[in-house]
Amino acid sequence: MESGTLEDIQKEYSHLSSLYFNSAYFGPSPLSAKKLIEEAMQKELDPSFYLYHDWMGISERLRIKFSELLKVSPDRISHQTSSSDVVNIVANGYRFSPGDRVAAIDRDYPSNILPWMLLEKNKGVAFDRLELGDEVIPTAKWLEKKLHPQTRIFSISWVTFDTGKKIDLIEIGKFLKSRGILFIVDGTQGLGGLELSTQELSYIDVFTCSSYKWMLGPYGHAFFYISEAAEKMIHHDRANWILSPKSKEVYNLLDYTTETLPGARKYDRGQAANLLVSACMEGSLNFFKKIGLQNIQQYNQNLTQTFLENYPQKKFQLITPVEYRGNIICLKATGLDSIELEHALKSRNVDVSVRQGNVRISFHVFNTESQVFKLIQALDF
Image 1 (cartoon, helix red, strand yellow):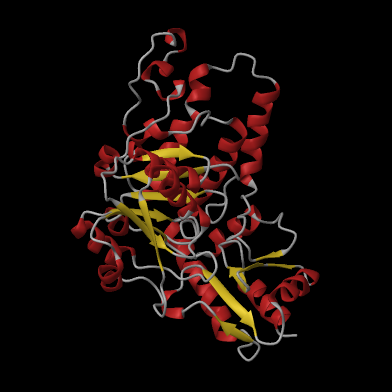
Image 2 (tube, rainbow, N blue to C red):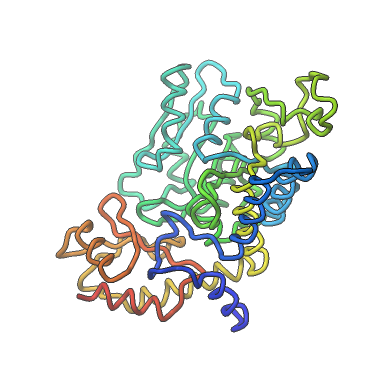
């Protein structure tokens, strides 16, 4: 990455008060988002003569920015509050036939498990939680043995939250497509630190991402991509005035219709044009567009490689398989409880998190090589 770009990044993150390696928990927004939030706050304080189209146009402006990030049509993007909301939309909108089943990997993040459990409880659709056993990651060959013949949907995280393992989207996607199985991917722990290629996305039916982690946005926003084929299978079951084509004209709201705006807009959450949340999200999206996801991915991988080559290996067991790593590194201390280690690092102004007994370290674009070595030094005590 060019030195000028690195300087811009450091200016955007000069406000961080710790050695922050915790984007897998909560990604800090760039400083430039503050100006947009302040402008939005002024509208909240004084909405005098705030044009309806300017206000309601916020969500469409963000939709376009997300579509540019993924290189898809804006018609394929929907605004939500969380990844759980997205999985619930699929669970409640897919028209299941008797005997149809859903599958996911056991011990995946709750967002990818609980909606299917509730579907099974309320509607009797069988939900299979597949045990990985000795497998490092699920593969097409493994899924071929494990998936029930009547499986209609397979749901999984791109990068696991507690081990940092990344699945092969293309391999699995090709297999699922050949079987006519809907492929749902939660990219929350990937996108932003990793780039999602056009080829990878071509095998995914629904890709969801909570924006407050690696996407460096606000809590309370998520978005999803849905393919044209999947859109035809997943019906929307929520009536909302903002989804109506009549919402485009404020003087005509009582001309009722159940028709919706085109594409994935029909799934949008209510009040998607939230001024403060949207302003923060726009600041983050502007940052990503300026730096470029490909540049960020390469930079993050370089930082991760520096860490892996220098961390105190005698004191830690590496949990994340190097050949399957995404943008999270998980360690287990050999002679110290992970919670105690987290507290010890906090006393050294190092911010990481612990998940399922593993110390989880997240290297993102605002980190520097100097900070990585300070982390290594803090771990070697």
